[in-house]
Image 1 (tube, rainbow over the protein chains, first blue to last red):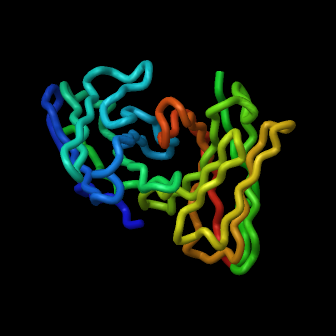
Image 2 (cartoon, chains in turn cyan, brown):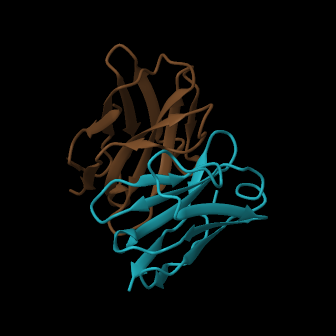
Image 3 (cartoon, one colour):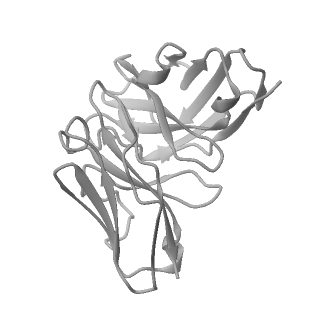
Length: 110
Length: 122
């Protein structure tokens, strides 16, 4: 069970859109539609922003969207705002009720 | 309102066993589909999934740590306990517990505790 691969950093200016990728394998991300994304601000607990590839929990702005193609999932943040400056982690179901996290992406709002 | 809170020692010595307790409110582990998981985060590093336990006592563990981890539940106390044996300095991390639902948002965690920092050092 290896960690999912995310770019270490991403950036964008306020109002722009940014997409963060998350790459797994055919044994985890490519096999199941149980991809989640979490936002984490420094010193805080993670917050679920996307589950089951593209569903948003109640209260999460529709500026956040998720998708998946093959072994790669993507999180798109549209209309970037200052408060989107945070770390983002993807996860995938990996079988046998186990979950694997990505290495995280630091999103900087310029 | 769902809340979770982790408790346990802040400092453990190498080779000792760590016992962490997650005390929750706003849901019951007797309810069909409910689960609680543990996730940790070494300082400055990524999140790592550790274990999960469900309402039906089904349990799963991180494969690389399976021999060291045990997760149990006490539904009367609304608590989930994680034990990790043979602690090593590399296990220094903030440990989180989190709520999950098997039938909706499976394998995602929608409510998290604040986390507790555990340092392993002699």
